[in-house]
Image (cartoon, rainbow, N blue to C red):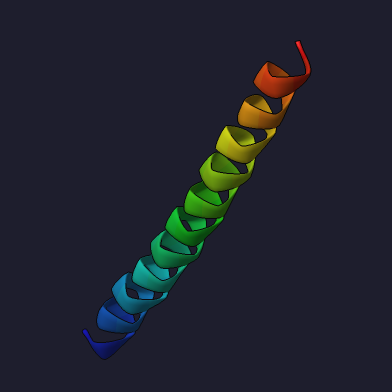
Amino acid sequence: MQNWVCMIQSDGMLIKKLVAILIRFEYWLRRCSRHIGRLN
């Protein structure tokens, strides 16, 4: 039972890491698109 709880907790950490990466990627993408828009 405790092993199952640990699995869920590690999955939660993985999801948090993925969300953090997605937020960073989205921010970088928005910055780059704004920069490209300024160049055109």
